[in-house]
Length: 455
Image (cartoon, rainbow, N blue to C red; front, top):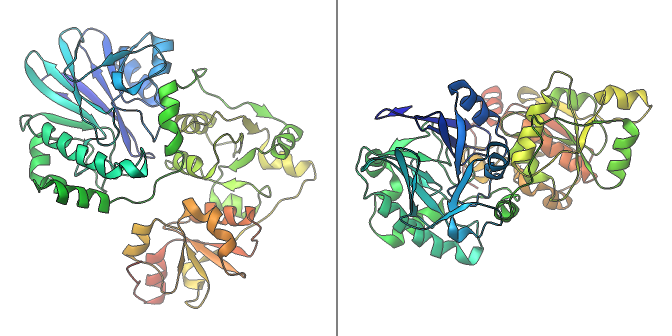
């Protein structure tokens, strides 16, 4: 996109629901804003435009991805720009409210915008005296504001009140100023669904429901009422970003591990993550492995379901990109130990056992069968099979022992999360499990029955 001649590229991570930004400074240099540790898209765009990344700005100590700023500092000699209040334990230029950075023609002005986190900054991009756009991070986002319950439960309401004032401060900017948020649709940071990733101050003033009221209490009630669950790894990445992530070798790769090496790692507590398509996993898989099909949402479920500190070993098909696996894992804090060389074939060739998981279709699933719906609360409330049991996937390992015995059919919206849930149940010792291919709408259409709504 080009705003008054300044080129700003939004680099969308569909899986995490976030956007990084690359700003062409007009002299062969670039500013990267809120880039994750998986820098592939940032580097590709910079190379395409012939730019050297000179600055890496972070709006806040992200909870949903590891920052790439330390990596850019080490490999590109980029200057890291971030809040002085963040207490980062690595070289950076600490900024306070109102501080400005001369980018060589353009200027970046720090605005204290607490709410999503305490130390949150928005960055106003100025061309001379004219504001062009504002990188709002997790304060103002398209159609909403980011959640305020990530710091500590007892801080949630106070931070929501701070968020109210931060948003209204941003509303003091002219209508035409571009709004470039980090969090967007698909993010667990409370972004609503929708295709729009960027906006303007004027559009948000006119359409954002949270800005429709000038009453602070009503704002707080609306914001807190929209909060759902979030991945457990959110709790640890803020501190990891404060300390500074380790610098990775580039390009990323997966080490090759023999069968005996993998068995030793598993015996020592490692987790085998099977990234193959669900049909392949259903046909045969290593007992005790976690199914997490490689797709846009891979990183989210890896971070949610693999405990912190657990060594990760990957099993993939030969046509699946190892760099994609390593990159997605790295941005949520996992440096993968390696992959099973030769895949499942190598495991079978050693005479080692495999397991299988049953599959079923919507038309074959009877209404009186035990169905477990593992979607998010909001998805379940919008429409589910009559009588379905409901446990969110993120908490399933804890709730599995409380479920009734016997055959259970697991379902989600399409099947990928359901297979992940089935693997979680199998790891918990439940083996009478099968997975529905499809979702509630498929079942309702097959049976001519309306879905139920509500919790």
